[in-house]
Each structure stands twice: as structure tokens, then as C-alpha cells.
Amino acid sequence: MRNSVVMRYVAGVCCLLPLPVLAASGWDMTAGVTDISNQVFSLHRTILYICIAIGLVVFGMMFWSILHHRKSKGAVAANFHESTTVEIIWTVIPFLILIGMAIPATKVLVAMNDTADSDLTIRVTGSQWKWHYEYLTYGDDKDVGVGFLSALSTPREQYERQAGGFGSSNLPDFEKHPNYLIEVDRPLVIPTGKKVRFLVTSDDVIHAWWVPDFALKRDAVPGFINELWTEVPAGKEGVYRGRCAELCGKDHAFMPIVVEARSDAEFKTWLKQAKVRAAEEAKAAAASVDYKFPSLDAAMKEGEAVYTARCAACHQVNGEGLPPMFPALKGSAMATTKTRLGEHIDIVVAGKNAMPAWKAILTPREMAAVVTYERNAWGNSTGDLVQPAEMVK
Ligand SMILES: [Cu+2]
Image 1: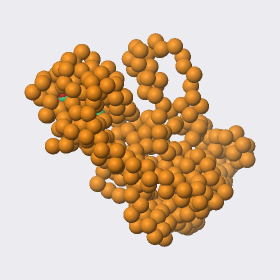
Image 2 (image 1 turned 45 degrees about the vertical axis):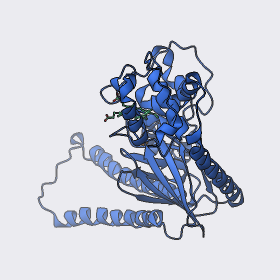
Image 3 (image 1 turned 180 degrees about the vertical axis):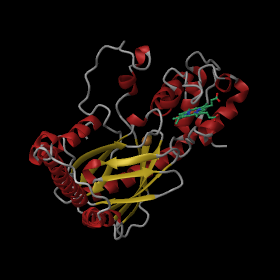
């Protein structure tokens, strides 16, 4: 992960260095932790050795010929046309080399795509700009019913340096967390020693789910489901990181992936807790319909937190949006006209075009708070206090 693209190009150029030197330099590909990632790595090595050998032979012959048949030595060019023997040789040899390379490559490809007999199935959905993980089946449990969003947890003010707008350096330098831009609020948790199948898809545009240590990378395409699998060996418990690998819009750089591999026993405990948490969240969401904000200020305070976490990526912290893609809410007719409150609620609940539907993600209380916030922040001053009950119509 820490290797930049440039470094990998440099590594490519340096492939004539002795390979152990390359590996020690940290510029080489990662061998990863899974059996498949190791197979991919050694395949890469095998092909690299073959390319080096071909390079040495071809360039060796070329330089040798240039040197030994140079004009100053009195060399006279051969004068022949259409040598069938030569043509057969330069067709058959590359053909054999290619077949020799295709056999191991095909073996690895077939193994990578064999998702049969998995123990755990997880659906991974890319959605601007976060990941949605849903645990579908685990062993005999055909309806796990655990799902959550996993989003970047580095505070937006830090990476957007909001005091002076995007890219501004008006903020004093803050202490960067070691996991700056690579940490998420809720990581994906998987068991080690178990075959985990991922079904990768997308809600909106094409994303790609990429975890280099597992040699996993597949496009998340709306309307399609791509399959992937991994098995982290027992003993390799730990935190593995990846990122979205397909340019998916403005915050593409800010949708990291964090996978926690835990022993099977610890995973089971985690899953139990996650189920309890999911049930509690569902109960709280249902109950929150009956909640009543005591004052506009109370709703504004909650609304601001929801807005910053969920809406600011598109509509910006200052409510000005990024027109024409993402409309401004500051001064927008919908958010400032009392009679258009219904429309405002509708678009938040049900979404519209690139505006996500929030009803499955936010509770009625959160939606009410954020609508209240949008109608009273940044100089919008409808004075409307929206209550959770108004979200269910
Ligand atoms: Cu993406």
C-alpha cells in the first residue's frame, strides 16, 4: 500500500537489479498474506524471470552482432530473402514461450475465481463515497442479517482545511493521526481459516474493491454482481487496508477499506455482538419516530452532526454545494420556502438521481434533525422545526 505508483514504475525499471535487492527495498509488489496472493506473487516473479531471460538473449545477440559484424572489421551483409527456416524458428519459439507462461497463469486464474464451498458470504456495495457491507450467510446461518456502512473517519475539516476552503493552508498544522485518511468508522470483520466469498456491486457509479494483501481487486458495477473470495490463514490475524481503485468521482480518494481478520472464535463473538447492535439500532430507529425535539436548537445541534457526516461530501460544509453537480442548499428555494417543506422531506427520504435515498441509512430522528438544520443554517431562516414523525408519511 505504501508503494506509490511512481515507485512501482521505478521498480519495473529496476527489474534488472538482483531480485532479492528489489524485495528488500520495499519497491516490489507485496506478496500478501493469503495463499492466492502468494501464488500471484510467485507467478509475477516467474514471468519476470522469463522476461529477463528473453531480454538478455535478444539484447545479447543484438549487441554481439553489432560488435562483431561492424563495418570497420570489414563485415559484409548477408544477402538473402525469405528464409523459411528462420520464420519457423521465430514463430515456434515465442509460441512455446507463451504457452509455457499461459499454463501457470491459467492455473492461478482458475483458483482465484473458484468461489465454491465458501463459509461466509458478504455483499460489498460501493456507494459515493463509502462501502456498505452486508453479511448474508455464515455456515448454516442462511440469514445473518448484519449490515453496516463503512466510511472514512478522518474528520473532513482536517483534509479539506475548511477555514479557507478546499486546499487552503489557512488552518494551523494539526497533528496527523498515523492512520490519517486510511481509517474507517466501522471496519469489515472476517474470520481467519475460513473461505470468505464477496459479492461486489455498486449503488451508483463504478467503484473497485481492492485489498492488496489478499490479492483481491474487482470492479463494483451498478446492476452487476462480481464474485471474489479470500481465505486468510489462521495465525495471520490483523488489520489489512485497501481502497477504492476506480475513479468514482470527487471523493474517490476518500473511501478507504479496512479489513480486520480475527480468529474464528473471536469472529463468532463479534458477529453475536454485531447482531445485538443491529437489533438495537433497528429498535432505536423505529422508536425514534416518536421522539420529539424539545427545541429548534436541540434539533440543529443533532442536524449539524448528521449533515457533516453524511451530506457535506456533496453539498459542502458551508451549504454552497458544487454546482452544477451538487446543488447549493444555502439559499436554495426548496430549503428556504416554508411551503416546500414537503418536497424537502421527500428528496431526503427517497432521493433523486445522484442524491441518495436516506431512509434505509438514517433514522427518522436523524433525517428530521438534518432537514431542520438545512432549513435554518447558513442564513436559511425558515424557523421550521421538523419532528421525526413527519418523516413517515
Ligand atoms: Cu469509489
